[in-house]
Image (cartoon, rainbow, N blue to C red; front, side, top):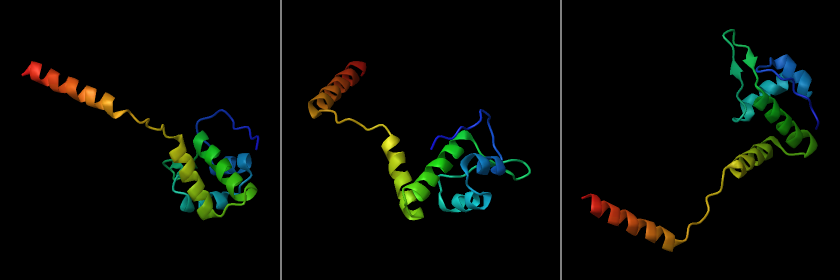
Length: 112
């Protein structure tokens, strides 16, 4: 899905519909189903989408229309992707932790 997103800060729902090929009523429905998808609103209560929102719409569209996921499956897949993006904590060997603990105890004792 090669979609060119214009270089601007905010997009109205009609612009997002045109860029993504997803009708406005579907976008509003997806907002109610996908908790990750919450565009901001202007003072006049118009939805204001950012680039990240459009990228999410394109990801949801791919999951639902191309890969054949159900909405529940797409939600689960997006949650998995979100947790995959988090840096993984590496296991620190216990002997190193013990050494650090001993050093902290010596430092505490020297400060007392």
